[in-house]
Image 1 (cartoon, one colour):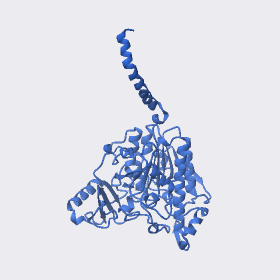
Image 2: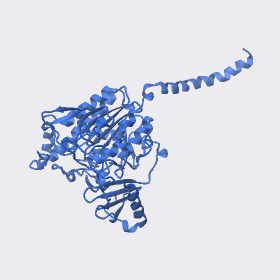
Image 3: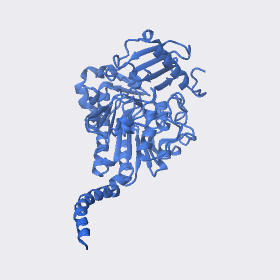
Image 4: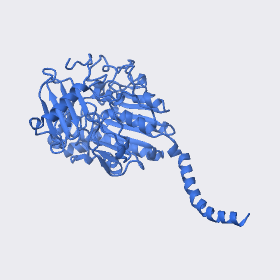
Length: 471
């Protein structure tokens, strides 16, 4: 070797020594199992819980330590909305990425003897899309989008595993006559608490698929009426709320004493099962590979003796289930993904349930359908706010109680009531940055904003003969 070449190695060798470890670490990063696999998704959606029904969102009469843990170790989404203000359309929009102005299902339409109006086979759902990328999908809880055996049956909509209640009407008694396991009807003795059965099957699915990318959809039936809980769990709450011991609630033939104690017990029970999901992910060593989102399908109900005002279930918000005021559609939401989502972070990014589909597509590297209303909020979750796409507005409509429309446009919220009687009824306008409780209608002061709201409402609605609205 010549002196010149010796000199070259003397110069180059230290550089290589510094570079090789860096290249090795990058190489190993791409080879490591945790980075090579696609992320898992767990979407927990409770039934009719209000914005203020969790201690990390202000609840004081009971605690939700596991949801709080998700917020502490992950992200609170303060401006996240449900897809609708009642069960079926909220779930339909979630599954398909379409808002309620052009969704297949826009209300709770019963099909006797068991089930609701079916989601059509032509609908393209989250599990069907993720299957293209090798995902296994399981659903545990309340479906409400098609009777057993119909085209809307979850087993006909892309799910590989289903356990729970197909019919939302039957799911509201927590001691049902039967549940469904895939396509099999499993008879019960009305002595087993359905929520516990559902949670156990959810955990079995996660454990069985720990080596596969999976989508686990968990629409828990708590805390919808009937206000029922196992007596051994409710007993301590009876002592805490003795003033309601003579209060009764009725729902679906069930009579419940002290529904206030029952509600607190139900929420405690549900929160514990959220903790079981997080603990299992850690036990299996897949917590770093799993995004968990916790939310609600709409605002709080007033059924079965439940007293949302006693619990301040809405927090600072106005309205309840079946309203398009904030209390009916803004829902407490947290996202948890160790190592990916910044611990203790908070986001006011405006998003809704129909944004879930494109979000999961982006995170899994799956091509999303072209005709979605949803916008991925993956950049927000991962702290990449500069790349977060922002739309002009969100839109909702609801055909019951005279017909209602609502638009969230930045800080502005527009609401139109009695649409079915008068499609041009006046629009209420609120500045949510100053008036989150929607107490001061300032429409008369901002006619240009009202005009934009009106245009948004007109361009967002599409006719649906099954759920007639303003046609």
